[in-house]
Image (cartoon, rainbow, N blue to C red; front, side, top):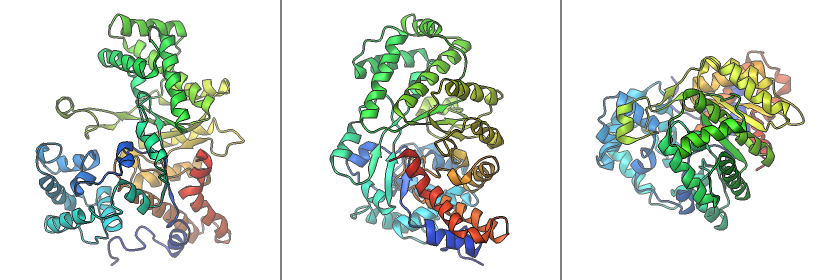
Length: 469
């Protein structure tokens, strides 16, 4: 019987083991999409304790604690940090076969050098040891990034963000690039009249542009897009429920804008969809103009628990996978319009519903074009799919419908400074996939040099070349 998390964890064959240990294990990390707080990086934040580091803001963990019957006071409530950690430790044994079991112990092992399993019996000892180490040099926000050989981090930032901390980081001489990412979701969120009106006013303030019309609104958006570009931004990211591709003229957009901003009137579903479509298209034009890569995270249905949304807000663990019966037609229309106008930027599409993997993989193949290899990317398994089965499914589908060899690989999509073992997790799964195929005669062992370079590229070099960091 093999021990847990041994050196060949997830590597089932000698070839897989060689690919991982000899070729990708020590490569740097490019984390081109995450939700780290740039303020914590700028200030080189020192975490108060392991609860502050591990449980604060991590809705993955919160969902499992709730499933284990933990009361909300020990999750997002006013319980002490020790009590919250204790309840998490009580939950961990029940997470066996959930990826959280692997992630938790990979992080304990690689961040703190702790090989013991987290449980109620070991909780106090692990809590004390981690807290002691968090006071040492090398365990601050920047220290964690250095520990895992991080080379580039791209955060997620609203157009109204000042990017002050990104500037501070750059001016400090920090050797790891920390770049902003344009995330304009709120600029599309016209369905909530009050919030949208408030957002327009905030946008007017930061851009210095008086907004009285839709054209003014676009001017303010472009002003901020230019500002992000000047601050080093190279990517946009759009968290959308679906691909919005309705026809919407400037005149229609102006009428919708006036209705919601001037008249403070709620919109119809058709008006909402048209406005979102217009804004998604306008953002895509700006992305192409700057030579950015645009990312589309789609397929979530959010804030399903109204009671808890009212109590503790969004992004607290009450989201799930959505379905979309019109996905193929709308995605096709959106990309086809941009392609027809020769305005289609490099694009990464992250799918959240596994039943739509083949749909996405075949759709993006329609819009590949030279001279950019892998211009249209089927993004790695994300959120509910950033686990072993999800990663394997995504890579298998990409392999059958496109070029796995051109894939830009993994990212953390995380708010945690200790989520970097997810890159290791992905790299092991990748090497196991290719190694097993070689051992089974599905790939030629005579081409080991190319296959070794292929896993190196997917793990690191493809992203470095694609984004041109």
